[in-house]
Image 1: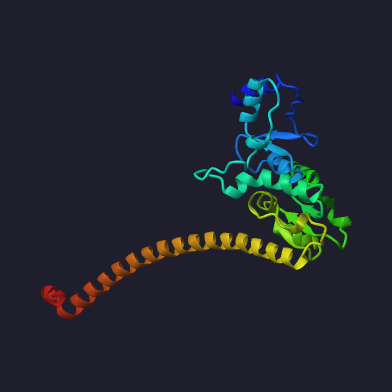
Image 2: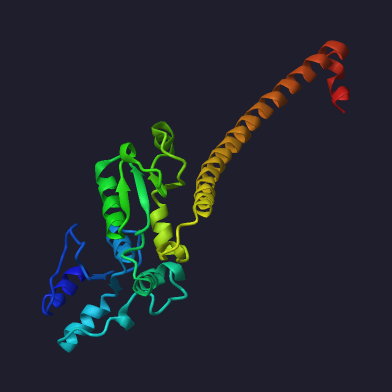
Length: 260
C-alpha cells in the first residue's frame, strides 16, 4: 500500500517509472532501506542516485523535482540503525567515487567467470555485473587475464578446473559494494593480483570456519548425549555388580554392614 501511494505521487511528476528487471537506463532508485537486492546492488555498481521515499513525497508537494543531495542514502547516517554506516552510505560513496574517477562502473576492470547453478540466480548476478561494467566470460572462453571467479558452489569451481584467479562466493558482490572500503579497483592502475587473491582466500576461510564450527557444535552435542546415556548405564551395571559381590561373599545378612 505504501509503495502504491508513492507511485501515485511519482506519476504526477515528469518522469518515466520503471517497475521491471529492465532497469539499465534508470537514473534514480527509490529505496525504503539499504539491502542486498539486485536493483540496490546494481544502482551502487553504476553510481546511480539511490534516494529515500521522502524525495518523491516532497517533490510532489513542491510540484517539481528537488535537489537529490539531502535525500540520498548516506547523506545522514542513523547510529541506531540495524544497517552498518558502511551499508547506509554505500550508494553515496560509489556515486561520488565513480564521478571522481570517471570509471564506467564499480566492476569496470573486472574480468569474471561466473559459475552459478540456476538460471534465474545466474541471470540476476549477470545483470548486476554488467551494470557495473564487468566483462563476463564462460569458463570455456576464459582468458589468462581473468581477475575474479564467482560461484555459489566451490566444488563446481574445482571440478571445472578454472585458472588460479581468486575465487569468491557470489555473496562477495554485496560485501564489495556495501561493506568494504572503496579501493583502487576503479583507478587506472592494474589490480593488485596477490592482494585480491589473499582477500579471496581469507573470505573462503571464513566460510569454511563457519561450516566447521557448526559441525563441531553438533558433534559435541551428540557426544554429550551419548556420554550421558553410557554413564547412566555404567552406574546401573556397577550397582548390580556390587550387590552381587556382597551377596556372594558375605551373605544376605551382612549386606547392610558391607554398604556402610
